Every structure is written in C-alpha cells, then in structure tokens.
Length: 254
Image (tube, rainbow, N blue to C red; front, side, top):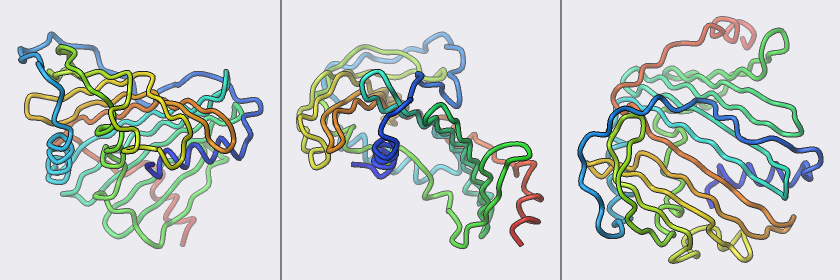
C-alpha cells in the first residue's frame, strides 16, 4: 500500500478515533466546469498498464504541474482528513506543498517549499508558526503524484462510463464497484478488502486526470473506510513562487 495512505492510517490508529469528526474540506476546490469538448466515449475497459506507463512518462517529462490530493479515513461516523496541493516547477527547481490535516478537531497546516538545494517547512500559522530546514532537500521529481496509487489504478474491475470533464479537460470515464484483483492493492494490510466505488478519468492523450476511490476493510485496529481523490492539473502550466515567509524561515533556521 502507498506510504501516503499508510501514514494516514497510522495516525488514525494512534489517536484511537476518539473525538474525530467532520467531512472532507478540500485544500483546493474544483474550477467551474466548462462546456465539454468532443471526445469519443470509451467502449471497453481501459488498459491500465498503458495508462500507468503514459502517466509516468508524461508526468516525468512535464516541466511543471499541480497535484491535488484529498484523503479521508473513516472509523464508523468519525474521520481523519488529510488534504494537500503540490505545485512543482522543475525548470526553476522549485516546488511547494500545502498540507492540511484534521485530527481530533485540531487542524494542522504545513507548507513545504524547495528551491535548488534548500527546503524549508512552516508548520502552523501566525505567531504560532514554527520553521525547519531540511538537510536533505526534497526534489520536485519526488513530490506526491499519482505514481504511488498505481495499485488502485490496476486493481479495480473497470467498465466504460461515458465522458466528462476534469477542470475543463475532456475525459473518458470508467467506473468500478469491485476489485478484479484485490491482491494488486492492500491485501497485506487489510482483511476483507472491498471496493465501494471508483472513477477513473483519462484525457484524449491517455493521461489520467483524476482518480476517485472508496475502499474498506479491517486493519489490526478495526474496520476502516478510505476515500482517496487525486487530480492532475496544469502540466506545463504551473508556476511556483517563493512564499512570503521564506526570509523568516531562513533567518530562524540559521
């Protein structure tokens, strides 16, 4: 299972779910839908191996891009949420990630900024903010992407489901309500792994633009349901600027 999801599940296990509440509040909202350009409807299940290869190639070659990720882990009526937006600019050797987590009704906001060989992180906001400098910089090529969700792309039993748009980009859509091969994802961590729903959106060039999946099962700490959404946007069109707190971070971490 992806390390990202394991980290969220581990956090939920540590807090024991006491007092958790609320629904997902995405870090970044969808833009208004534009009129859908013409795109042929899918007529068969997707070649997931080809989709994963295309994603890795296109994402790896992009000078810049934006990744939006929203994760909710539920235990009964209670939930922990972790949302992030990553913007990267490989040409300028810059990347910034904005992350929000809500545990025990106590939101935590972290912003990590990388430029060249330096990475700085701000935790919290206002007068309570703290700053750290990473001795091993985070490279833009290593930032969160669809790459660690390949199991959730390959495992579902996808069926064609018409067309739509993701942030104004015309896409072919596929849906699933069961796993074709659950062993491709999470079988070592979950008992009774089941897929509740899934949707995969692919543009005319074969690039995955959005993945939405809800799955569940039993961990050692009890039953859990996970909803994951990943959106790819603005490949080649994302700009990254230094945050206004950068000079403060540099000063306080000398």
